[in-house]
Length: 199
Ligand SMILES: Nc1nc2c(c(=O)[nH]1)N(C=O)[C@@H](CNc1ccc(C(=O)N[C@@H](CCC(=O)O)C(=O)O)cc1)CN2
Ligand SMILES: Nc1ncnc2c1ncn2[C@@H]1O[C@H](COP(=O)(O)OP(=O)(O)OP(=O)(O)O)[C@@H](O)[C@H]1O
Image 1 (cartoon, protein in one colour):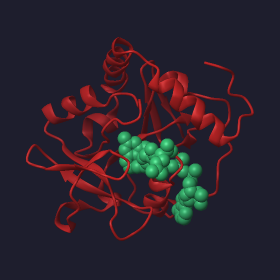
Image 2 (cartoon, protein in one colour):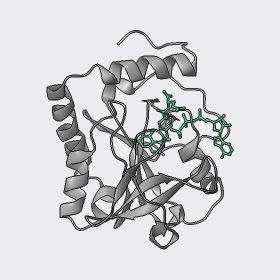
Image 3 (cartoon, protein in one colour):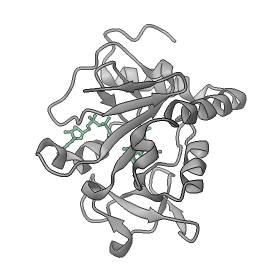
């Protein structure tokens, strides 16, 4: 990994995304198994019943083993859907083996939007979040759409809140990311190497 100190966010994003896409299949498989291992004993992972996950895109760490483990444990799973009316927001839709998935405008598979299967984010207990880079304080750099930040903006106020868990390759850790006022800090980040906890 080239030094990422002092890069602008767009440049850091570009480098990390390129690096992610260059990994081989065996590297991806091993990291995905290790990601699950890092999480197994986490209490949020074990005890949360309503969990939002995401389907891997653009070289992101593979969430397949993690999802299969949650399915075996009988958890209620949700997937992010680009909100059809609230631009830049996500909606979390119930996902089970009967759910039909379609590709969104980024080519990511998502359930068809339907209000009856949508779960308000504050009632999800654990949100597993994709990220492009992170730092030791739990700041997250995403794809740049601001989707998760907008959707989770209610967390700036007190009230019922989900735990936020970033998932990443350990090498996506970078020196301090300047936190933006709209950024929502993560509770923890699981990587192929370890679990980082914040606060
Ligand atoms: N797996 C996964 N699902 C996710 C996200 C994610 O980061 N990963 N999102 C997290 O927010 C949301 C989708 N956000 C995304 C934002 C930008 C791009 C993207 O590829 N942008 C292109 C430009 C594409 C275009 O404008 O047509 C690019 O930057 O190259 C993808 C997803 C919801 N679902
Ligand atoms: N709560 C919010 N309300 C309004 N605009 C927001 C909010 N959060 C983020 N944005 C806007 O979204 C844009 C992208 O934000 P940022 O670069 O932090 O995205 P990101 O976290 O990398 O993306 P993503 O969450 O989609 O993976 C910013 O220009 C910001 O103004």
